Image 1 (cartoon, rainbow, N blue to C red):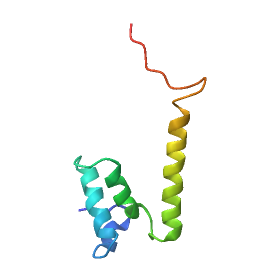
Image 2 (tube, rainbow, N blue to C red):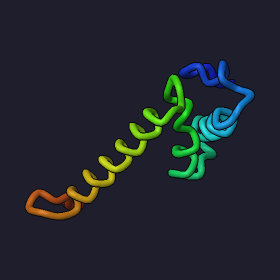
Image 3 (cartoon, rainbow, N blue to C red):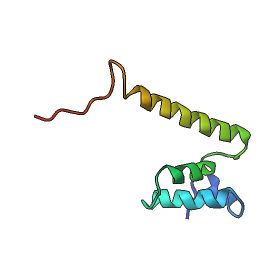
Length: 83
């Protein structure tokens, strides 16, 4: 049972039932990658309203942008060299 972030307090309605199930898969190491993280997003917010959805989407865009920056340019990520 999840108690984190008040998820169980909101159980019994969508999108929280789906979010709780996805978060339980993440905690149980049976997650299906990014899809479960997207489904679990409502658990991390007090209300899953337009403001929360916009915040979640902006964070995802920022992470993708930062990830792409790490793959190019003079300071790009390079594999470690082992002797």
